[in-house]
Image 1: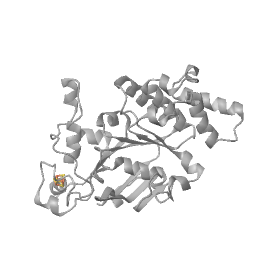
Image 2: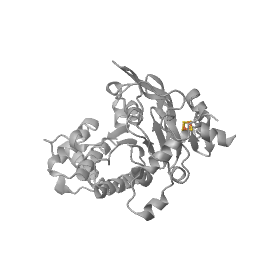
Image 3: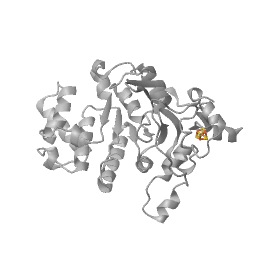
Image 4: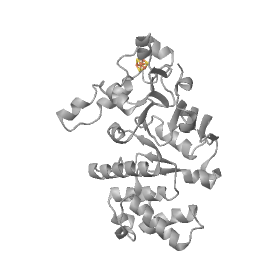
Length: 334
Ligand code: SF4
């Protein structure tokens, strides 16, 4: 069954429908095929993780959803409306309000000369200019309360805050527009373990209370396990595997997913027993300018066969909601 037919989320439950998305970047060395024919759904109120190494195309997918880039081919339907061909500058205020992003490094996304109050208030002023002064202050305090920041932080500058606190300010600013969908782009990658845990707990609490949909972009499968419902594994611009978190961690099928799982650092023997056994990490991700023929993972795959260089494997459903693009798995099913 092809992915187009196989992804069976009921239509009224789909927030984003991505189909055959392509995004290429011409360079002086050739064309970078950053995203090359990718299809998936994002359901309302779920957390979908896009996982893969640097160069997998996950951030490019997010940037097309955000309107930073326009799709070269394919479609992105948001609540049934095509947005893949609308750049951010041409998106109306309502759409810009609904899809917000929290970046990896709050130190660069927050103005160092503005206080926490100014940073969050600016977003309120842009998106809700008709609120009166008291309503704006009320909204500011509600947002700070949502992310667990007390009024003591109102007049602090970003430089006076820890990494986790800065990220809480960035989340409060994103929430100021009352979004439906938050894209979390490596939002906890630069944080220490305790700050990361605080942010993840805050995100989970906010998601429940505000019925938010999250798209989590990360290279870190350990983070994914704690917060996501489903995982899309990407490699060199292609989707390799889609599954629920439970299924992916208990039954990873694609050799690339197994390699990613094997590279999760564990702190104890006990912990390592809970992770599936994977294959050793081998080599580097090849260039997206001249990707390998057939299966793009074949230059690193220990199970490579002749067919792998000749035919591109199609994403097939191997069990309910679990899709894999691999000739080895397809052959085992026959
Ligand atoms: Fe490995 Fe072939 Fe499967 Fe690609 S299609 S992951 S090369 S076995």
